[in-house]
Amino acid sequence: MPDPILFGAAYSVYVRAARLALAEKGVPYRLEEVDVFGGPAADYVRRHPFGRIPAFEHDGFRLYETAAITRYVDEAFPGPPLQPEAPRARARMNQVISILDSYAYRTLVWDIFVERVRAPILGRSTDEARIAAALPKAATCLQALADLRGPGPWLAGPTLTLADLQAAPLFAYFRLAPEAADLLSRHPGLAQWWSAMFARPTLAQTRSPLE
Image (cartoon, rainbow, N blue to C red):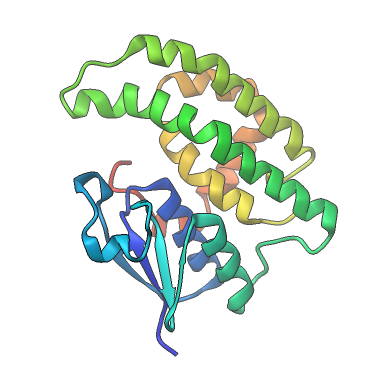
């Protein structure tokens, strides 16, 4: 059976989440670079009608949407399970992923990291008002994650799950903004979680070119 193919860009947090799932399962795969900011090619739109990344193919089976891809990877391949079996634990994992997708991604990555870190690199003025408006939202996101984490050590309980793999790419970018230090200092549990996540070899294997 051929190795899976992941279509997307190495800088994308969602592509990285899928790569982390593949790496944690020990699945060989090929990353085929797709830069959607340049406008996806027509053949890629046939893979993903909304032109987003990532998309995925395994032995003729095609998927798009990160959550669908990472769950498929966990369930279709051998290796350590990345989803809890117990209904409440799995629900907690899904809740964390939903918070990350619905609230944290836009706030931590686009409103703070991109404006503070990427804008000057790209020769664009930082939108200070956008950052200022995002900080209370970021604080709410971090508080919610800290509250749900409980005793940990991982975000959804005692074992590494897809929630951790979804969060790690966001935090890898967010922590590069100077505002992150103060916000994260209020949550020692999240700082401990990030230290444990940062130490995993898979995070180094999937390092973004923007870090």
